[in-house]
Length: 330
Image (cartoon, rainbow, N blue to C red; front, top):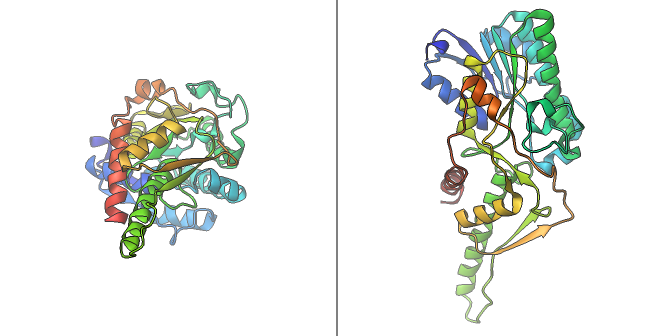
């Protein structure tokens, strides 16, 4: 607990989904000096803003969470922006951090950096054995360059930068925007909104004297349902990041995950159960599946800094469904 007491910590993306949990856990650990920049004040794609941020924050430690992210649709629509913005933010943040002499830089990568056909479970040493899955390769490669930079800076300058690769995150406060959300928040929103719409239509039809056919909710899901994914509850991810910040000081990348995989079809069935959705599921097979399988080998994180995910998948999903229902539907 004493690790954080006299540290000034800069958390880029600290007001976001993952960042808000990281900041909360920092406070719980006794960290009194936390600087959370807002994008309206600091455009981290611009070097001038990065330098100004370091001058204002004067950090000892930087946890770089800020990123331009999204699901398959957002990645396909914005490959150039996702590549450039993520690359420039990370490269410039690490460069100026080294120049100003900070103690440690924690770079958050992505499992999208892994090759498309990585053997399951993904081991860190497989990272360079092929090209990433095409739909998110620009984003994944931009993030992967932070690993190269961290290792090069450690080798040349003795700079303490570490690189963590969280699996897909989910939980309360996630991005539920249909244009850019990942699969879990997208499905939760679709299921709950489809039911709400049918209920509203049924109420209107009650006022019409002529009998009407009873409507049923319909949800359309991208792809075939065959790919598998692994998901990590956001609070667990925040804990893993802080444990690594406290205890891990090596050049090698480390996976952060929960160590299981579930097919998209089984995921849809589980979310339907937890949301009470009893309508029709339509699979739009003209849309891409993305990477065929994803599951991480999480043994290094447990071995190196004692991280192990604690939240069961169904429990985490239930909390996420309730959060969305309470915030947007009640």
